Amino acid sequence: MSRTARTSRRPRFLNPVELIDFTRFFAGEVTAGRYPYVDFDADTRWHQRIYRDQRLDVWLIGWLPSQGTQLHDHGGSAGSFTVLSGVLSEAVYGAGRLHERQRPAGESVGFGPTYVHDVRNLGDEPAVSVHAYSRPLTSMTYYELARGELAGGELAGGELGGGELVPLATVATDDPEAPLDIRVAS
Image (cartoon, rainbow, N blue to C red):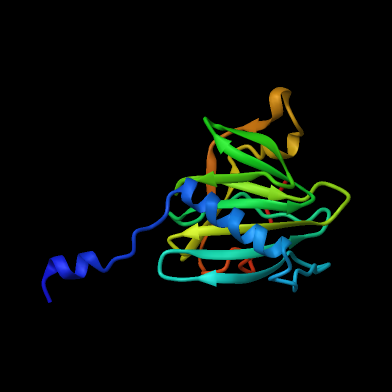
């Protein structure tokens, strides 16, 4: 087989805008009742893969109040999420700072392969979201801020604090809810 033939069979990975289209499509499918098994778990975020192929991985996630992720990337995968119900809070790392953003039902977010964020349900009601990754997830790296300033509370303009990202662990996984419990000393 020639080198050209092998290269042409590689999947074309999707960009953040295309991934938003996918999460919106699947959000519509969930809302229409085609995925009736949305659930919640008191101990951890409930999640279910609802689609996967060579270039795309799509997950449905249920968030009870106070459940969230740790600051993480997606191992070089681009991604997107759409909030179906509830409100999720997202702390996005950029320009040396964490910026807090509220993501209400109906909002979609697309991001590139170097995006670092933390998503949480800080509200009083459960939330449901659809997440997509392209290429499908193979690893995630978890982080903390160098001086632990995230715990310092919200600053003006939705900023949560600043500092350098310090990698805590990289985990090989194809699951956005990989069982990992990293405790950061305060």
